[in-house]
Amino acid sequence: MITWGSDQGASLRVPLNPRLMQRWRCEAAVIVPVIAEGYLWGFFTVESSQNRQWQSAEYQFIEGVSHLIALAAPLEQLELSLAQMKADLALRIELARVVQAGTEYDQIWQLACQSLVERFKVVACVIICPDTFEQVYRWHHIYSVSTTRGLEKTWPMLGDSEWKDFERGVVAAEHYPQDLRLLCWQDAIKPIKSLMAAPLNAVGQTVDGFMVVLHTAPRAWSPAERELLAAVARQVGVVLKQQRLSQDLERQTTRLLSMPAVWAQLVAAQTPAQLAEITCRAIAEWLQLPWVGIWSDTWRLSHPAQDLAPIPANDSLYQWALQSENPIALYWTDIPTESQQWA
Image (cartoon, rainbow, N blue to C red):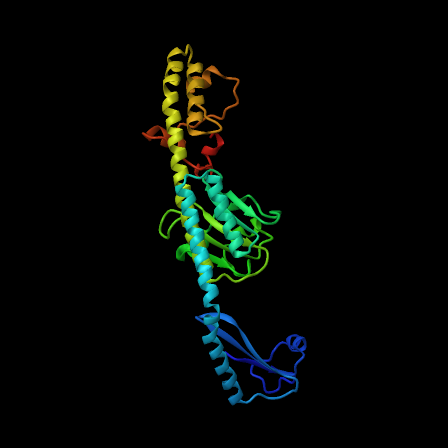
């Protein structure tokens, strides 16, 4: 599409902004976009210091010149593109090397985030992971070249519309939040004007978190940048899984080693209260829970001074627990309203 303008604007198809004409200090102008390899590379302009009308032959000639520029533009950038591709590949190789070398996890996160901040020239890169208890995303690691004031450490969970954006992989917003993407994070990242986010897993797998690059000014995100973020995010996701498996194995080992001592304490317990205390303490340590309780009618009758709400015999959660052979894991929001009175 060709856009042209003059000071009079009488015979114009698309008049240019008068402020733009004034800034250029011209009376007439033709602007032609230069589209190289499907992306806007720049603009070709022809200006005149005199007010004039442009002829069709002039439009065609100027458009032809813009096509020639579009053919030459990729060649001019070819050397730079090849150098950048080598640098991006070197980054991925270095990340794989430090992983294979058994580097500390915090150093791996730091290397990944810092490298992307320097590569994209943005203000911050953050890894966020879901907190299943609070139903939010929390910072797992962040690298920033400026203050993080205005950036919250917890971000809301994605809605259905946001998940659809991630079906194709990377989600980029060049003019955030006007791009109407990832608006659920808007209040948590108020200073941010552009961002790019990639899941820590391949498309189709369960998402364990996101890697997000943030900038305080609008900017475009090239295909090479999107591809690099997606690749690094997948590498980080693999390492994150390894870390969690290692932590799970360590916790299971701790539980197994502590079980003989717990059994000995249970055998030595003299009263039901001691049994309950030992059991609750062991469960809290094994499952890393802040609170564990045991409730029974017998305990309630022996502690009449305790301010506990009664459990109706027909309560849905109570009946569900009685009929279930296995423990029931629920979020607070999943508990029926009537059961929340005593839960």
